[in-house]
Length: 253
Ligand code: PGA
Image 1 (cartoon, protein in one colour):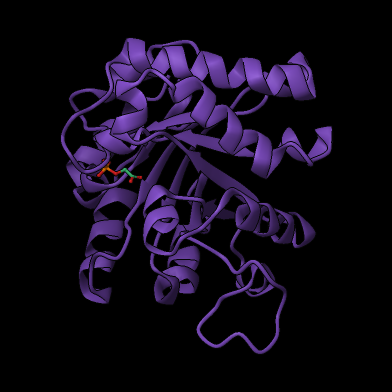
Image 2 (spheres, rainbow, N blue to C red):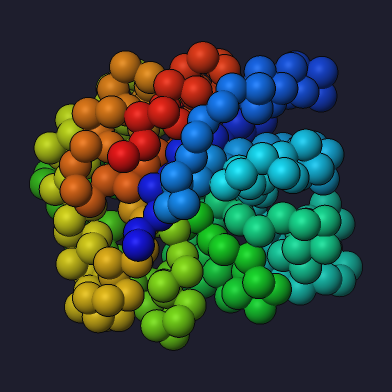
C-alpha cells in the first residue's frame, strides 16, 4: 500500500535550542499514524543524530538529511556522505531540492550520482523535481519534470525505484505563499506517475509516493492531500511551527 507522508524541510533554520523546542512540541502530540503514514523531519546536519534518538520509539516517525555527497568517503572537506549518514541511523535523504539545484548548481547528472550513493548505502532518496515560473508560463512543465526524472532516476532497477519518494515542488510556489491549486498538483502528479509507469511498470509506479511541496499549510493540506495522486507534502515554512505541522500530519489521508 502506497505510503502517505508529511515531510518537514527545516532548511537552514532554527538554533539547536529552538529545534529541540519545536521537535518536543510536535512529538508530544499523538498523531495516531496509520501503518502506511509517515512523518519525516529533514533537519540540519549537526542535529541529525540527536533528533534521530529523539524520535526512536515514536511510531512511523523518521529523520532525514537535506543532502548528501555525490562521492563515497574521502578527501572532500565539508561534504557528508551517504555512508556517514547511514552510520548515524539516518534512512532518508532529500536530493535535488530546487534551492540546491539553483545555488549549488546541482544538475540532473550529479543527482544521478547522489541517488546511486544513497542506494549503495541503504538510504531512501526523497527526490525533488519541479519547474520554474517561466516554464509553467510557457506550459512546458510536463516535459521539464519528465526530463528531470529521466536523467536522474531512469537508470534504477524496478526494486530500487519502488523504494524512492518523489516530491513535486513547483519553484514558483516555494516560500512564496502561492500554492499550486489541488487540480494543478494532481495534474502533474498524475503525469509523474504515468512517466514512472512507462519506465518501471504500473505495480512499481503505484508504490511510489509523490509528495507536493510549495507553500503547504495547515489550511490547504487536506484539500491537496485529497487528490488521488498527492501522497502528502514536503513542507518548508509551515514545518517550523508545531501547530501548523501537526495539522498537516493530521491531514494525511
Ligand atoms: P515552503 O517550502 O513550504 O516554504 O514553500 C517547501 C520546500 O521548499 O520544500
